[in-house]
Image 1 (cartoon, rainbow, N blue to C red):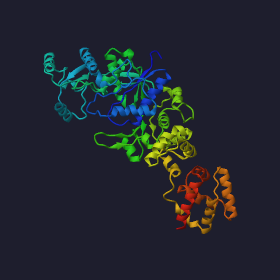
Image 2 (spheres, rainbow, N blue to C red):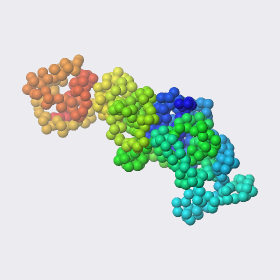
Image 3 (cartoon, rainbow, N blue to C red):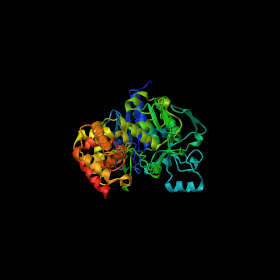
Image 4 (cartoon, rainbow, N blue to C red):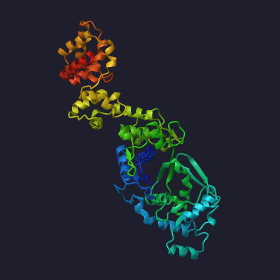
Length: 502
């Protein structure tokens, strides 16, 4: 690569961070790491009407949780700041005026009311080649009329003047040669009446100023590409234009259309990285983090939505993704989101984590459930015993809660039909002479007593489990008993016998 790799993730601070946005950030990050480049976070906050308080901090928190922290950002500026578009406002008008001087843009003084009239007159109205000469702009007004309007601070926008009957070509790193006929493109607004740039002007000016080498963005931005290509050309910067890569969409589970927040609400899964509360309405939308996903699993799942390394490998740590990532392996086709597969990734990642790595999250989940863990080494042992049974972090509560407090309820339906006074006598005898120095010794003693009392050990195992945990779940019952200790195990047996006898 000729120039130093500099890539950017440029979200708008308008709400929750969709998993498609996180994947765009991830692919930027991975490409930068693979090529010893720089990953930039730029906040595109020029649309002040849609700006939401707290959204920028939320975006930063999401990236940090995922482990894809930018090298340069508003919080960690480099030599290419400011990193918020709203703070770069003075630079945009200069370039918009330059485009007018060079004949590539024009002032448009049409009021919202005048535009509404045109929309009613012309179906599918577009401000462009077919209509621009019918409108109130610097192409149809005299020079002195334009100067008078500008002197009077008449509200106006600046629009790009799209050329007629041209074909705009560019090479997309994922899609190859892409072309657009300019007849299909309208004269987009570049500078709004409030002096703020639109995305079209800002993205080009900022990518040039920040020396961005490669622009990764979602496929939905493809229709905007010809405008941006023309702006790079018209501003005289064509040789500095980044290489483009338009990423495939993340599709609904049925494959029909782009995955949206509504799909998550309807089908019961998150589409945001982390919980997002709308400050205006107070509505909270759940995120992957709070649902109980590990960042390792979330990132792994996202990386394989539209990319693979050419093998059957499915589990990748972030460091491994950094090493193996390549644009050539990104698919052109959209990738269907599968929540069951997402949970599979999480289960696999939970299984391979150390107890120490999982403990803070498990502690927090237990605290939510009213259990305050005091003994870390006890918790580590429990985590190692039950992690293979947990898909999401909250599962640790159901799978471990009984280690911290005796069952309040029992699955009596699984015990009572076959419960007898003789079984009650067996458990009383077992509780009196319980020996829990070692799980295998405890199991041997249990089986020996069962045979002595005329029982098959198998018919006593289920009642024993339910006495200790309340239901038909959990790891080996003698492993549970060892961790509970003789005193607590005896207490639970005696309490359960009374319930089963009643």
